[in-house]
Length: 285
Length: 261
Image (tube, rainbow over all chains, first blue to last red; front, side):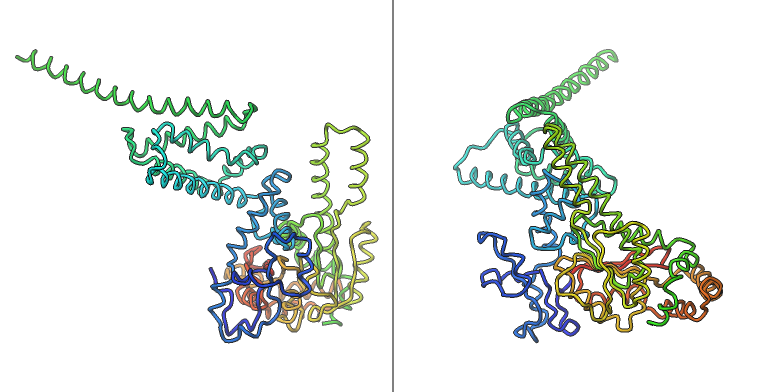
């Protein structure tokens, strides 16, 4: 993240849009560009835009940069604003352009992003994962404080996956498009990364519940459950996606059984081997 | 500079085609794709004389608009014919979707050629032609969504002033795009390119446009122009953020892009 103001070279060229975090409390500056924001209702924080030289900052140099929003933060804000337009425009540069407009920026700001809407989808997925983590964290706190019961693994997994998939509901119509964008070769590293870290998170919070699977199998199994349930959800037209949750329940149950079966296979295998050894010993004698 | 372009104006397009073997059209198309303008964009094309960028912009926006309308119509499949025809009509009127391009040039002759071309090719709406100097633009602050300068910035005496003006007239969030000849780092290509530039181009200039000197000037101005990184630094100095450049043809031409954030 570059310093926004490198003192000697940029005499008082305050950026037009990147706002000072502390300015949010002050009254809006009266400058010509503020007219764009009159249409925004008062409950939406008016964008503070320091226009032109601000004498009070002379000589304070590099310190100002910490208060200014970075380009990445601005990009995140644009993408978040763009989500509102996804149901209408899909996961496209158009949605991003509309999002930029609501922030008072020119539609050309969408040029900062890839023209296929990749960043928008990735941003959304990342946001959902963060929300899920927070949810699971809160639940864990409640359990630790003794205010809630600790859930058995299968229930926990079901609830976590359901919570995460429910976040897709507002965008469900355009979600197939999003999935295809996530599968584009240049997006696969990022999308795979997001998926695995989400699955990791869920297992982390499901934590110390014994399942007898090893770590890789756990990940693979849950990823499989999540992906298949997601696909089922795309096709589901039942009220509140009942069919999807039932599918999920069955898959999780299968996975649990698989664990038991694996155990049984192992112990049966051991028993068989021992039997054979015994037989061999007997025969040799 | 003014006199060079006065004499060059009429033959400008022909010379472009012959000098670059027609590739300049591809470069300009790439510029348009990079811009990816959505309908409703207000474009300022500086030093845009004969209108190449402007016409491409209009074509692009028109096709985007058509696709948008088609998508809307697909969604309207349950409406009655009456309602469909009404929406169709009102959208027809806005075939450009409120997009506009202002072509600004310092040279009257170039603008004249541009206007004639526009008439000839049938471009009527969404176009304006303004006489102006890139170092001191006759426009208000925060007006345009995109500012382009294609093969014009090397002719500006004070590039920093032009960049500052660009910053001034762009809306917050607006984009600066510059298409210009630049530095070739590959040594083999560089030698071939030099050979071509100094031996072939002035000769073409003499043969086609009857003007050796202007094209000699052209080639020299290309050599004198700052290379990619330097231009990038200058753009950043004017206040633009997320400044980046894309080399076309290994650096013969580069597109610099920056945002007013």
